[in-house]
Length: 273
Ligand code: NAI
Image (cartoon, rainbow, N blue to C red; front, side, top):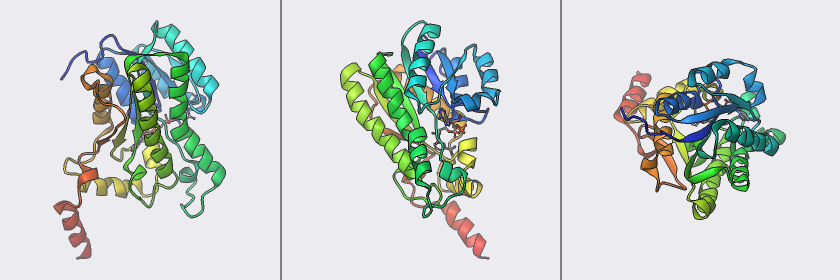
């Protein structure tokens, strides 16, 4: 196991809701690798209480912020900077929510007010985090900014609904802000496209459990766990990946480049018997 990959680094981790959250695992790994950070989540998630336990375990604080609110992000950066005693080396955007998915609206029957909400929470909030960071100049040179995506941004999936477009916007923001911030301050911006993962956000997608099993069979290495995703995120926050920017990086056990696997064919044949 590598040691102290993030020694001396400071940052902000959004989106830890419970012990299954990808952000939760990331906080534990970042702590293990020597980083100092603050946790944040929407005020409503705070009421569920679990995030305070994580903060205690990591020896840090939680600053509530709705990621769709520029004011909240400004306050988050001000308070985090004061607590950490300086600018940030990493930011994790681990935020996603679609009211249409949550309420089971099909892709042919979307509520357009909710579509706006999906985009705002799951994608535009990433732009807001970057824009406020740039305006306030709170990122150090070579800082690393990561958001989490899913392959439905690029390929059609019947169940991912308006989150497909939200993730496509998210990945586009990483490219375009990566260009700008790279030129301005050597800050790098990437998305990580993760396997289906059993979390609150993941399990909210219709038919998730079956698809989770399917994806495992369709990936030579199986589905990537939340913990392994956290390890990849920490690597991306480290200085060993300094020249990587504006990328969508697949962390999916090989799913995205697999046509078909023998295991899937065998499962199909068995289902016909
Ligand atoms: P999760 O449900 O544990 O985390 C989602 C987080 O978004 C929660 O902590 C929630 O409170 C937060 N959030 C929602 N609205 C917010 C707002 N307005 N302001 C601030 N925070 C808000 O689930 P998970 O899976 O850890 O999700 C993290 C990211 O990973 C999301 O972007 C998700 O789309 C992405 N992802 C998840 C996959 C999965 O299968 N679970 C697969 C690929 C990507």
